[in-house]
Length: 102
Image (cartoon, rainbow, N blue to C red):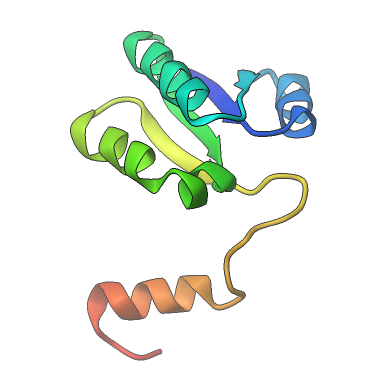
């Protein structure tokens, strides 16, 4: 199985291409939907990388794919500007998931 990237900027796409991961750069909602549909229909793609910007701007689209499709596995990655998450993101996630304060 292959990895595929859907990015909002050319720098992330170029960096991933250097690592051997093909991808596309999209900016609009419709472009994202089309790219996701193509990636889902390609059975060779096992892991789909999305820049975090899409998860923040279009959560309905990303969540719909995550909930309704077994493959590919969708992983949100930070772009060259860094992550938009708080520094204690992991601790908060664990607290919320298991109900214990760490």
